[in-house]
Amino acid sequence: MKFNIRGENMEVTAALREYVVKKVGRLEKYFETPQPAEAQVTLRVLRNEATIEVTIPLGGVIIRAEETHEDMYAAIDLVAEKLERQIRKHKTKLMRKLRVDTNNKALLRDNESIAVLTEDEEDDVEIDIVRTKRFDLKPMDAYEAVLQMDMLGHNFFVFQNSETNNVNVVYRRNDGRYGLIEPK
Image 1 (cartoon, rainbow, N blue to C red):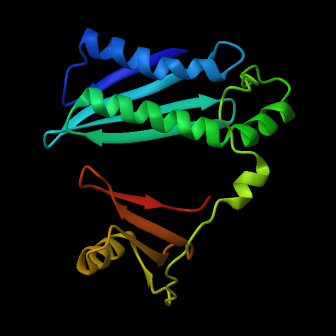
Image 2 (image 1 turned 60 degrees about the horizontal axis):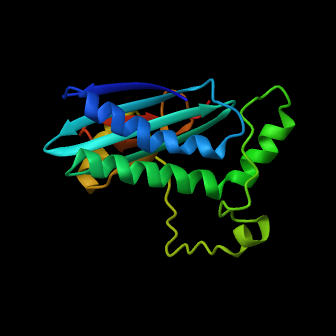
């Protein structure tokens, strides 16, 4: 697996680069063939907190994880564990998708020693929705939606975009800026 490691508000030292390659590179054991894809790794420090974001494109499937910790090395450990859990949890679905695409060379290794949730076990996982909210969507622009979100003290806000008439979501990013989610 190739790595594209970059730093924001920090310099990526050789030791950090080596540690990322060692920890995230362990994920190669889950794949049958070497990955032609390039893992995008972003390391950043903001307000004395280290954040690592890893994105690995796998032939139509994207595996992504982000972790924040006081220590960069601990954040790297946490993101590697999160990626590994993600791969194990979704291995069955990934295998189906990759088998359908016969041109894809990123086949997952069929290793019995890897703990994988079977379809029956996936159905047993209980999702507990504890609250449902219903509300009328007021047409507004994204700027007004951000103001409403801030006024309510929420991290996101669902609204009907007055320009497109689509349902959109504005959200507060970890860096303090805002994002907008729009349907295609």
